[in-house]
Image 1 (spheres, rainbow, N blue to C red):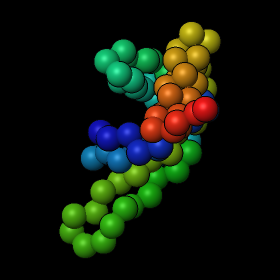
Image 2: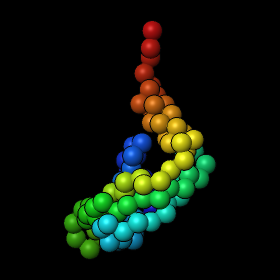
Image 3: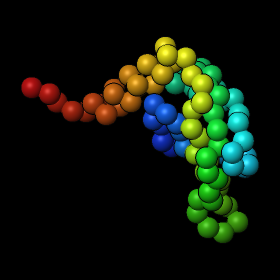
Length: 88
């Protein structure tokens, strides 16, 4: 599984699994080597690409995540947005 998009409230991933929309799952997100468990809801399943090698993309909304882990995600996003910017 490969993360494509991460927010404080959810994640979009490319996966070889195709879960059913509105299914609740527990995810383990590997964020810089730290595993973050979240309970999530499958919002949408979509196909990426065309032909026989289509991949499945899945949008999840976080239902349950600890405040500490949510802060780790928030800080990760902040760091990624600021990477390469030179502030004076």
